[in-house]
Length: 418
Image (cartoon, rainbow, N blue to C red; front, top):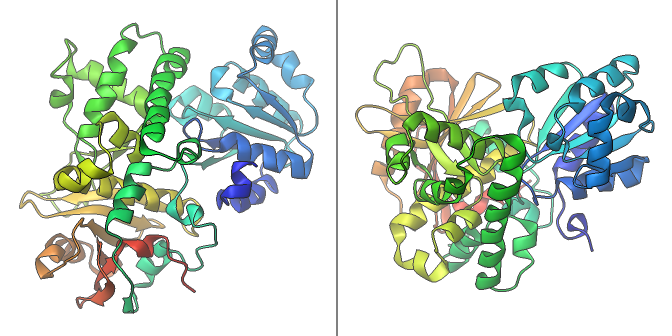
């Protein structure tokens, strides 16, 4: 049974929509998140021929004659793991320019080719990009989310509801992460084994395809240190400390980890009229299951170490919202807010370049007015653009705190509401 039979991927509708009017669609995201499964499902339904560059024979043939390889492709084709052969992009451009019919090619990539300007520019105007991540909690629930949480944020209205706190179930969700192959394993120990082997494979294999840097052996340790900094302000000096490497070199290594979707750098929200904002980005691991495995944390230890759980929970919420935004109407960008008075908002969502909502994440089951201090400052800074301020907490009820402010149970992230 395939992953799509177990878990629906809500990016499927967006993929088919893009293929109806765009010559090339790129699905990119971390390895093992379900890109190939999604592409194969569409290929089977719509008559695409599938090729993967993980097949060394196919890879060698394409490298030997990229122009000829593209010329001989069938009318519709899937090219899987295309980041392994960047020299192919110029030939794909020529192929598309000769035949601009929509739905010509589906590409998948386990590295972000958009961070390589020459490759991104070669298909500008010819390619749509869909980012696929590990499974969201909504997808794990196996049903359409109805009116998703992001749409409710921007409606500015959150009806008061009664639910139930998650307790240990929330710890399990955070520690489990979202990779289908890890979730298929039945014990924490077996999941952690998969997660650690996954990190080793990415740092030893995929990154060698992308760079000539010699000291790649430092990357697993660097990623472990990054896991300890997840949801914190980015600190290059702290990350460089254990290595005999400069801060610029560490930044270069982090860019590589970002390129293979193991970390995300969350920029600070800014406004030209405000001068007291902190301009340092935040760092987030791509998956809390990977972060927990790298830190040797399981459900029992997270129950004891509430500080670490709070960090992972913020990353968990950020990744859930970011992935849900990929199938939500509107264009969304994500930031964090922090000013020199130490007031902060964990996640700032910007819709269509003009509307703002803020999310603060709490690991506890109680919430009070003081938890809205950062959100109130964000509302003052954004004026009429502000739609909603939310404190997500592990509580029982959605409650109004007045002036567009709400306390909302974390479980509402994946609840099906109409």
